Image (cartoon, rainbow, N blue to C red; front, side):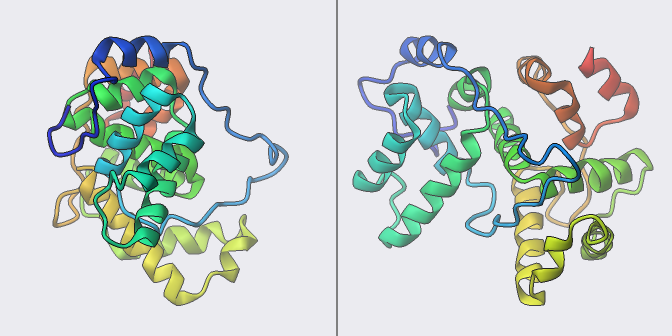
Length: 238
């Protein structure tokens, strides 16, 4: 575990984590909007990658097995060590809502994996919750990487956003100030996940074999949210 993010107690050892998580089925993503484009959920401003919050939440879940109980324990025990209760509640809730979309194997890696795997899993959780972020990662970030165009800009976001408005009228209701905040927060996520450098240069993804297998066992198409070549994507997907 990355030492900067841990809320482990004497009741949450490695064996109990692995055994407990393997018993749980992943939360199914809703297919309510399977006919036509599913409306984008554009609420990713509560925090950036939320690495520490996510690792702590995953550790607690491995012990208690209920996401509602996780939020309560994080809030009541002030596990995030945030002075403002409302901020702690908001960040804890956001972390949990993202993690609910990960599989048991992915949650286990988030608890016990390397920091690199933890960063990638937090990015995966974001992309599984927010289809807009998923599409930006696969259709803009990775496509630029494949074209050897490594400089990611705010202009790329704006072009993508405007293009998506043709299919997602809900985007037209977003104020310019909110749109700017969404853009800023998305770029913060990308930097914290090491998808891009501090200078917004797209960096090749370095995923462990265990993480690749965990994503492939869920949905191999999700591997496209990472900057990898076509050849590597094909190899990882098999």
